[in-house]
Length: 146
Image (cartoon, rainbow, N blue to C red; front, side, top):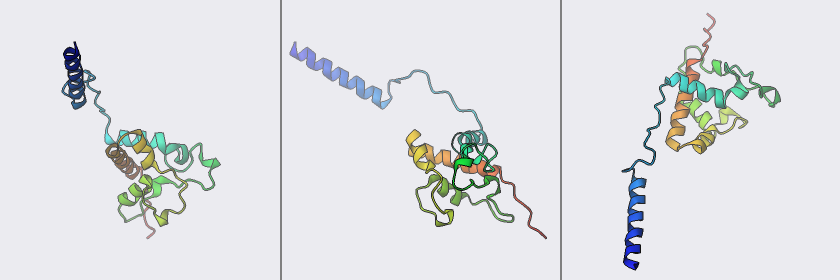
């Protein structure tokens, strides 16, 4: 009797290890593939996290904007004429883990922490990158006065 119970415990533990290792899928139906383009993914992230303050077009007119101390910046005018889009700086501002003195006070939420709490560090970094690409795509670069 005792030997039989011991074998049952070992068998149950082995089954648990097999499931944890993924040999036997815990969900036989695979997760559906996200077929959206990077632009669409970045846009969705923007609308979920940024549009409340920056507005649906990114110009700083979101529904939360009037309640803020300072008007949110126009995110369509980040890139200066004749200069490349500052991807690294924008990534760091969104991620919020490094203090950026040029950014001023930290009124904007630290989205890196928020995104990491929703998924994994890797997924959060991918989401930030998609958001940076989306912001680059909506730039309205004014021509320098001649």
